[in-house]
Length: 201
Image 1 (spheres, helix red, strand yellow):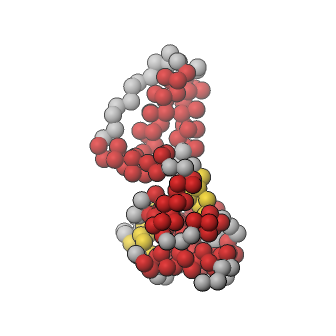
Image 2: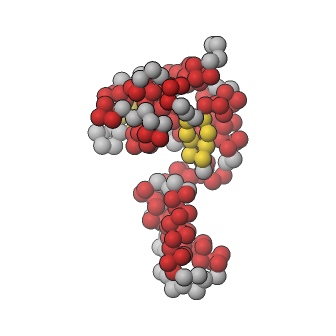
Image 3: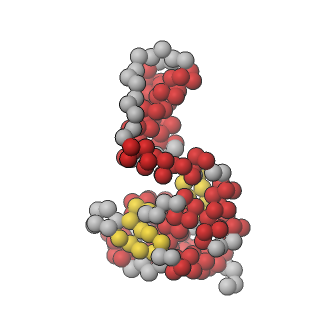
């Protein structure tokens, strides 16, 4: 295998796995090593150095659920911890490579962009915490999902997030994250799911 092809395949694997940016370099080196070993390539590449302890722990924390649990297991865990019926969650959410997403269209989540973006923040924060054990969800992750669903409020994003009552919106201005608020979040999630599906409470 040519080195160019090896590098392209390794980077493609990192992108497909949606590895968090701080861990991409380590994941890229690992991908090169594994593809090289599997293909038996003789390409002369440097052996990746072991990850720093904090990098290894972060990698385990951020990808453990995605790599060891099936979608069914993720939904079962999500349901158990949120106390929302699994069948209902499966109609509102889906997992892609272990990453949670909301099923559109945006109109399901509110009558305006601010309400829709806050619903997305609630849904993703709950999914990351209850299904993946990730207690903080970066605002950038929330915004990316809003953009995908075409409900990003643009310059009013921070204002919309500051209006959240269902989850905590905390952190420095450029490092904002969302976190669950105990029963407040689980109760709000139930209401959101029921509203989306038209289920009587």
